[in-house]
Length: 118
Image (cartoon, rainbow, N blue to C red; front, side, top):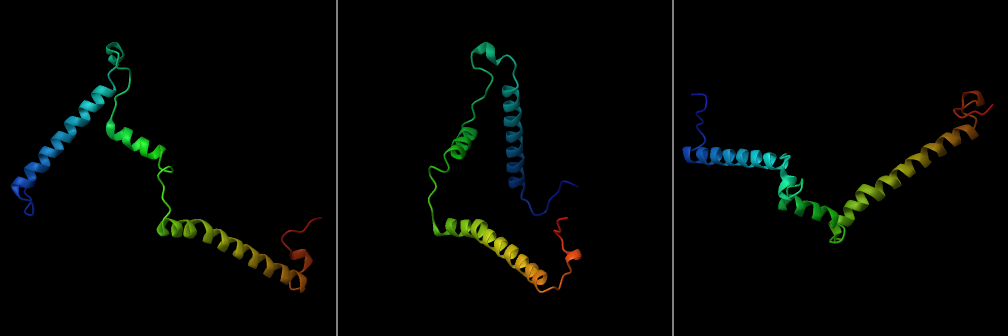
């Protein structure tokens, strides 16, 4: 009664279970092959070639060779690099100018200043 799902048809449920079994079997076979200590005896070496992982690693190694600047990537660069740096610089300058103005107009006594050198 607990495994009865009303929103899933029996055919869909069988397909999902078959996919799950296939995936578990492939995972176990991969782990068995990759951890086999006797692979060196067959001349294969200690690695297992996986074409999907190789494509991913090749893509990561050459992604900048195939980069194409578009308006979207330019806006990302502007929004995540240039604007925060300019905003942070403006914030630092305005806060330091305000503090300097208070020092020069006498609103802060010398003994209360933050960076007093003795």
